[in-house]
Length: 274
Image (cartoon, rainbow, N blue to C red; front, side, top):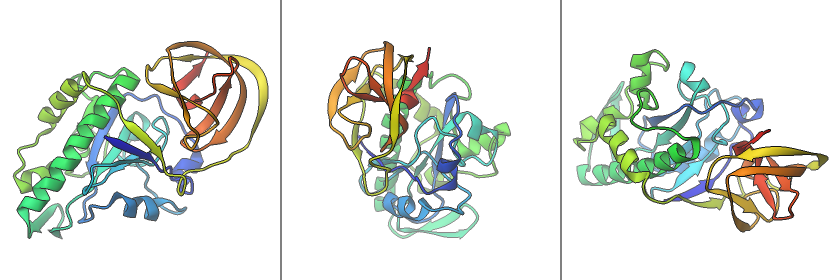
């Protein structure tokens, strides 16, 4: 799976800078006939929009566009799940036409099913990676839910996605099956991340700080040659405690920290002060 970091730095949700302790993941679909994730990335990167998710999955390629740092509080659920869950939208086929509410017609079922499969498969891989990153059990009640399930639980607004899409296309996909697929995929690898510097903040400002300790718990956090995902990689940092001597803003994270060892920079979104 390919993941492109394209942070919506102009969106009011990103600018609010609120963080969450990630306790779960919510799966959405966009509710309109638009398979191109880049359209949403472009249109949502502005102020005055009362919505923001953590990512979109492109219907034509399966590429994931990360639009918020994973631990930022999103505006995706319309309820309390915003305080606990990462929200990811799957794009929908161009060949469907909504006729009212969650109902639609489809002019090319084969193509539509291919788009649904592409986004489903990418969502499985992404959610498996996020579950490993945040120590989540995909089979535990309430950890992975759809927007529809969130509504039933009283933590999200009244939407029927993505089950409405899967059911009307006759894909056979269910959320129970999705959770089992995520569990199985957690035995596999991670993702390939590519910075999209046209939409992510680059350069940045910062300063040296009084050295302090942070704890890294995830096993697949990159060390970068500079403060941003637009810099090259120096491999992974092992879980443990490290000293930070400088902080800067930069692409792909709310803040970057320079390691005292001189190995490079790490995203402080995935490190906790000791």
